[in-house]
Length: 314
Image (cartoon, rainbow, N blue to C red):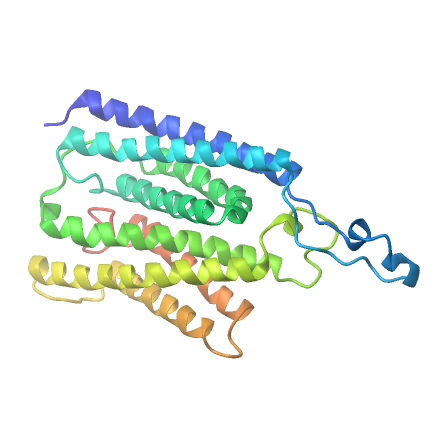
């Protein structure tokens, strides 16, 4: 039996979460617009490089009080959105008396929540990272809108094939790994933008982002965290497959692309520590990894056919 009132509450919280994240996104935009500014050498000293014809040097960007206020508002709204986002899954689970990731709608919603929580943790630990909030919340809002419009499924008991303890183990690990990789991939995209020659010139939005080294470090550390979780998800999936279908691995499309993603992220972590591959080359590998994860969630689930296609989950 499904509790219709709790199911309706879950749907309402979904709309509330999208609204809160959207307002937080606007606040992050205001922070970028009115916040950090690059302090040039001519502002720091009475002696100017202009006398020699050289371009003024740039010091680390400083946060203005106005920008700081917008950043705090944005983070507060993001945290509030994360709480209502959590409520979506909690009330849906209570409505159906099961774990709330038995279909693609629930799985994808949970993945986005993990990405938001991962970002909030980073932003709280390192306030400078608030400035990438617009580039995290933008994809979050777009993803939730796409999930609500394209993947929504009425709350219902889980299908018989998923009534297993491995649902809690395998799918939970997949959700955690995917969500963390989402933040890692966004950080690598921003690193590629920031690391371009002359990217900081002109005082535009790019100049207000954290330093390229900071973005690269965030991408690497989150990938380091997500990789063992994803590894465990793949192994747990193989064990569940043996229990359910009598074989550990059958090169089902979902299994194949999950393994491809694992290989790409292993390659990224190796490249990140290999001379000659660090920097932009490694970052591109990380971006490819995120693209493979998105392909695995969307195309493989919605278009290809296989033993996983009935459920729409990892």
